[in-house]
Image (cartoon, rainbow over all chains, first blue to last red; front, side):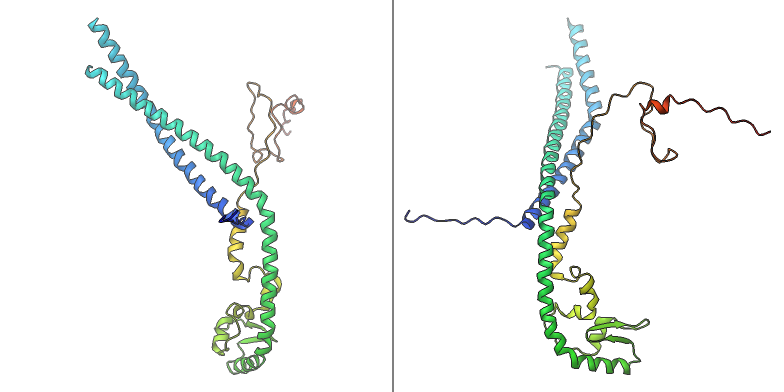
Length: 68
Length: 215
């Protein structure tokens, strides 16, 4: 195996692993909070959007009925 | 396309966009929570290993400081003598517990560090050893808390302490029959624990007789 490179991988210590996991946890927690905020805002806007959609649909049906 | 149709399409698009947003956010929340649960399980697994490592590091650090300390204490004898003289001259503001504990007396205007500064204690070895000379009991009773070298490890332990063990799954409760009250606060219930809603012994108990009026 001429020219082969041996790469020695070192295993992170338990403390380093824990620090990495804690950082990841922090990011995940922030992502959950952001997603919850987004979902809450969308849920808040949903009834109006539903009503607007239904009203628009009713108007289209009425127009079609009128023209027919 | 009529104006009404355009408006209808826009309204439908808006509705669908909101629905998509909610679905995407919910999927993201579920994914993140699942990963958080895995992370927490890993942290709980790592905690005892880290606690043990921290203890070993604390012991090693203590040995290192103690070794340096012996040298310092030997070198300190003349300084202590000077400090005693200074303290006596300054109105005995300090009680010096030989050979290394310096305790400011009540009403003293200087703390331990100020005292050492005032008596111009020369270099006492490494800077890390310096504060430990102030109070030997700190090392004896709380050796870990005294070591700045262990700060990072200690912070990690505190952070790990905030990660709770995953709760055990709750056993499924039977369906609540209609007309029963289930949520009775233990605080509101005289004697502590409220009866369970399906506790027949409690709910079928004979009603107490009305209190007789005092004659």
